[in-house]
Length: 241
Image (cartoon, rainbow, N blue to C red):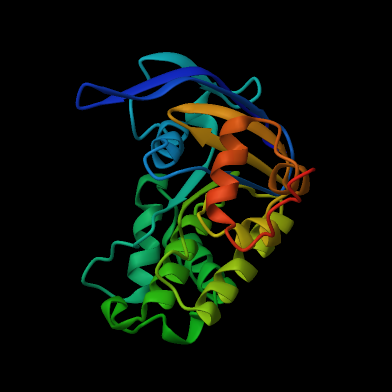
């Protein structure tokens, strides 16, 4: 298990503070979900964890290890592709590692089999459907054998069947020991996948706890307000409650 500590980080973009003293300790294995309103700072949080955005203050720590020694994978909402085969798009992630040709081929084949794209390895990647592109993104993240996998709304534009397949792959990677942190607005998905949940509101991490507790009995006013807005089908409490 890769312990992740977010210690009072501040991040600004375009002169606007996006994360402000964001703090959490994530030491649970499996999947951690990040939820909260649009513009709360969820995607910025993932990029700060990955080192894609500079942190003005505070730190992201991975136990007692230096961040550059932690193998990470990142899958965005829309997977970017190069004009090449499915296999070449996955192999792209291995270029910085200096692996032998045989090891690269072995890893690419294993990653594609994991996501069900093995038979399509030589096809043009840009012919893939949206769901297949996201599976390719997961293969590209998996091929580096990550300890930490960061997912930013990986099923936001997918139909239920494609979403189910992506969730199956995520569960499998988590079961293999990869720590997964996923941003999602799909609370059903959060309930299905996550062991614990972080709630982000206006740049702060306002709540963190087990998934069942956060979704059904949130402690913070910000989390209660967000969940009330996202779950309009829940019955209103009795007036005298």
